[in-house]
Length: 421
Image 1: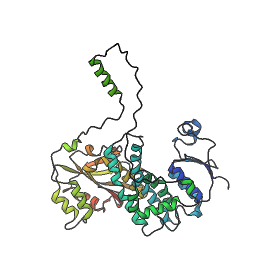
Image 2: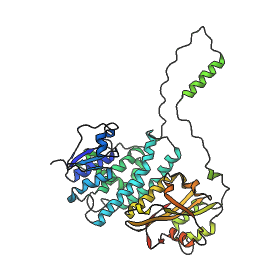
Image 3: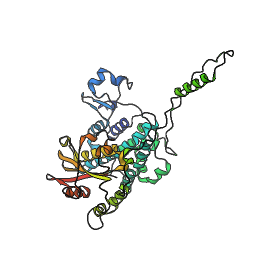
Image 4: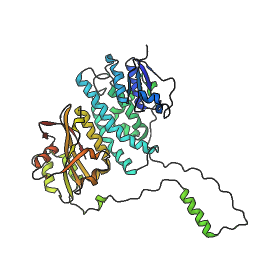
């Protein structure tokens, strides 16, 4: 069979392997470039003329059609083999395939990537981020495992691109963070992973998984060997002061990363409050939002308006929003980047409206009276408008509806949302 195009990737890139797996299940052949050296060839003018981002995976079809971004290429390759059903066989199945792909990439991979980057010294190690991200994993793993308890595959009765995404995403988790005990806690997810990785057509593409017995932990990079200094002539005695200076210089040459100072967050300096954000999060999770003995009743009885404040949050650029599930994923991404503010913040934010006619809005309950002090840990916080709410007065209806997920703005009804807890 003639090749449908050429794929630029590397033998360790999981998104590239997912594309190759999709082609194999679709009965398609993908060619490889005659030669490719990453970080060199992808910076050359001829490569950039085809793929402006300079990123891989990159694909050029036999008809000259070009694509970059792994997900776009994977979907296109699946679409070239419609009978394989890799994108689902009905509109409902297609939507579910997209749902699970997005969930795996935003709730699992986005959490693991920062950990592996720090473990491999690609970015400075930050222990609170490492620990916080590890603590985020059980929830999405449970969602996936529970869904698969009564199903062979994520969608339908055949392998889809969603299942291949399990193969490409979970390998990063199983090789770095998830040990045997944790694997055994999510047996249905692990069963699907092994099914996908051991499939006769795919096993060689994926390669072996290097499972771990214990989660990998950060190890500081090895110190470079110091050059031996020539011995001083015996006749010359070095004064004590000089010796001290040499020791100090040697210490300065030591390039091991210094321990991070345990500076207090400015919000920790605020006067102590009787309102516990953690207690509120538990109340919100365990009680009905409205009604007697509901979460809202608990909130009004316990809230400290001096130590905390309530804010309306609106995405500034609704014209950029397209499919509602993608907008909901955007909220999830924003919440992931707010991880450093978890102890100071609760959020309930949703997508209102329909595809290509929607907006993102909701509420934040946060420590202190200045929203910026809490949210500026997220690089995209300025893409949102923040307005302080009179939660018990003029803005009470908006506040309660955002928490109850029945908010409606200008005829646009709440479609889906996420909580930051």
